Image 1 (tube, one colour):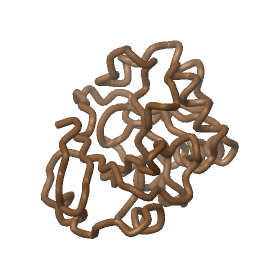
Image 2 (image 1 turned 45 degrees about the vertical axis):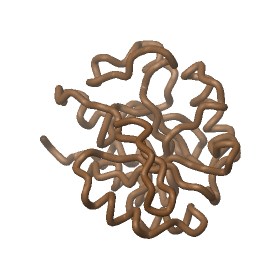
Image 3 (image 1 turned 135 degrees about the vertical axis):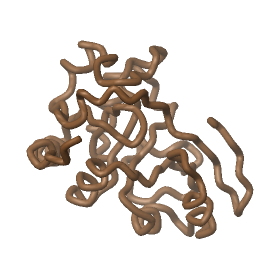
Image 4 (image 1 turned 60 degrees about the vertical axis):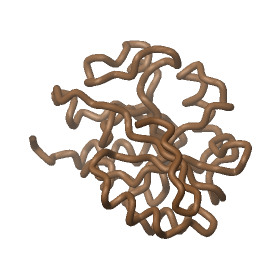
Length: 190
């Protein structure tokens, strides 16, 4: 698979900076994304998914240092746990900092995944902000396992669709989802 995605990165950066929506491949399923610090952009994702903003969305970051910037006093042991897992794992952290208010749960928590996908890591590092990542489907519909599963309604509603990996037929699964509380793990989605 070619790593030639520079044009996709440039187009995504323009859209993200303008508060728009992107449709992009992640280390799990294809995602709808936007600037995680822009409340108007986050609202567009909720509207497109026909989803209540009571239901939180995941945020992608590029590395551990991003967690330290966006979470108040994270338990650093979580990083040891993440290094031992083979499945992409999203962690719900208490004390979200610097995100759009409509992205943070009422209890002040935020769901963050350190992304391992090459394209996503490049995009996040170049954007220099966390990016929302929610499955590219209308709420209640199945998550798309490959690009061709994504509905025309979703494709028409975004501002840019990444070309990279559209032909990848590897079946994608959502990340594991855990709540981390001082070394105590609550598994929310295996």
